[in-house]
Every structure is written in structure tokens, then in C-alpha cells.
Amino acid sequence: MAELFKQILAWGPLGVAVVALLDSAGVPLPTGVDALLIATAAYHPGRAYLAALLAIAGSAAGNLILFSIARKGQEAYLDRHAISPRARRFRAWFQHYGLISVFIPAFVPIVPLPLKVFVLSAGALGVGTRAFLLTILAARIPRFLAMAYLGTQLGDNAMQWLLDHKWHLAGIAAGMFVALYAAVRVVDRRRRPGRDKQPHAEGGVE
Image (tube, rainbow, N blue to C red):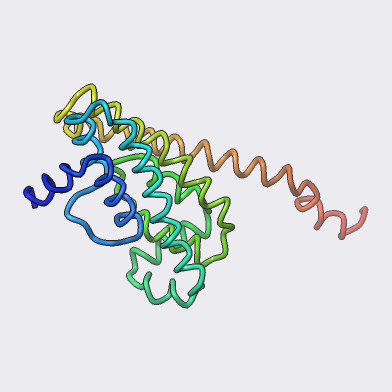
């Protein structure tokens, strides 16, 4: 595995793009995009942000592939590929929280949430392609640019820094989730101001 990592690392930013594409499309890989991007930034600091941009593009393309497959197969596809109790629980989370459940694991590293299940749910349950792509980009752009920056500043110690601060990152994820969910609820209520008043209106004046 270490030898394969070195070979991919030798490809530079192109290797990051390929791994990001395959990883986001659901292909099992021996290395993660974050680790490879950090290593590329550490060993090739002059190409760090090129590698980050290619990682963003590769990840967006890979997620769109997975999203499109699930969209074509619809709920029947999701039923076949999200059959474990854990996967069904994540599917229920998506149905309740929508694209927030895609954004959080796509944005925050070292968060124990599998992005794949939420991407499949988004595709199979009819989320618009533009809204999905914007969510992925909003998460991946700051994340991968931050990984490139950490790689140039901390070198090989960047991954250890992430591990040392995993609880801080988890706290950030939780805070973002609460803030985003509250914002979505507020926007939803403003878009449909008459819904909460509808039962009272139908009941007439006492």
C-alpha cells in the first residue's frame, strides 16, 4: 500500500485528480484524497493549489457520476444499495435534513459519516442536479484548499494535526449542522408563510 501511495504521489496533481474522481464515484481505494493532497502539497508546494483545484474538479465529477447513477435507478436502486440498518438510518437522515447531510461529511474531514449513502439518497430521491453540485462545491472548495495549505505549512505533520484536532472538527461539524438546519427552516417558513395558518383558516372564526 505504501508503495502504491508513492507511485500515485509521483503523478503530482494529476494523481490527486484521479484519486478524487474514483473515490467520489464510490471506487474503494487504498488511500484517501486528503492524505494524498497533503502529501502532494508538502512535496510539491509550488503545485499545491493546482492539486487542490484538480481535487475539487475530480471530486465534483465523481460525485456527479454516483448521483446520476442513483438518479437513473431512483428509489429501487437505493433500496438495493442501502440495505444495512446503518445505511437505512442515514437514508432517513437525508429525507429529514436534505442536502445538509451531504454538505457536512463533504466539508469536514475526519467525521464518521459516509458521504456515499447521502449522495445516493440525493440522486435517487430527486434532488436537482444544480443544487447537488453547488452543495458539493461549497463543501469541497474550502476543504481541499485548506488541505493544500496545511500541506505547505506543516508537511508530513498535517495529517497528525487533523487527528489531534478531530474533536474540534467534530464540534465545528455539529455547530454547522445546527446553524444550517436552523437557516433552512427559517427560509422554508418564509417561502410558505400561509401553511401554518391554513388549518386555522379552514376552521373558521369562533
